[in-house]
Length: 80
Image (cartoon, rainbow, N blue to C red; front, top):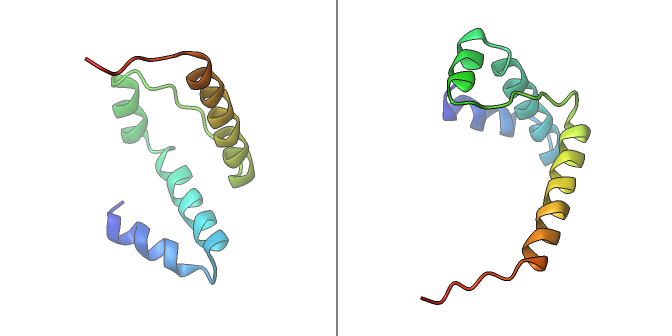
């Protein structure tokens, strides 16, 4: 799918939430493509589909919370 098509999908809805749902559905369909699956597997990706936009939002929020905890707990010295 081209970036132009995805941009069109974002603007297809009457609001941002509808646009996000449209993009989610487009990406979910693309992720079921045998060609896409093969290319991702060659790169050692774990393909785990979210069943809904709400589930994806929960996964993202949990990931942010998890990494936020780690980055606060581990002090990294970037001065060299």
